[in-house]
Image (cartoon, rainbow, N blue to C red):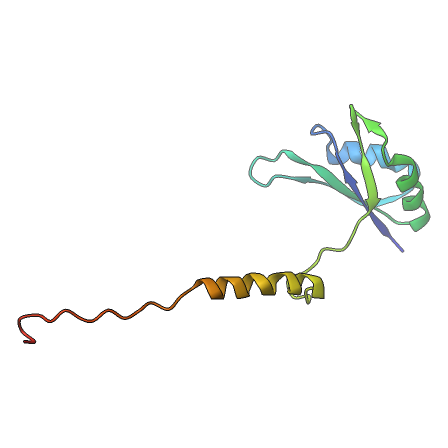
Length: 123
């Protein structure tokens, strides 16, 4: 089974090829990705490496976390799956949102209707 790891605090100069080079010594890489800004093409400073073997990924996690690359200490940990919008929110988040909605509702006061001014035609 494959295991995906997150690699953060990457130097801006690190490309996909450089990321492969940094992690290939730990085992066979299934996929690697450096996340870039879609408008500028510049690295956003993080990426992902997927190893074919979980043991290889664990070894890379242990040895590469806090390793200095081009003056920056990498932050390497197991990647968490993306949370989709369709998933239910945890109860903690729902509880935080409710008071905000209630406060918002209490601040809004109904507008008082103002009497229409009579025009010459109506009088």
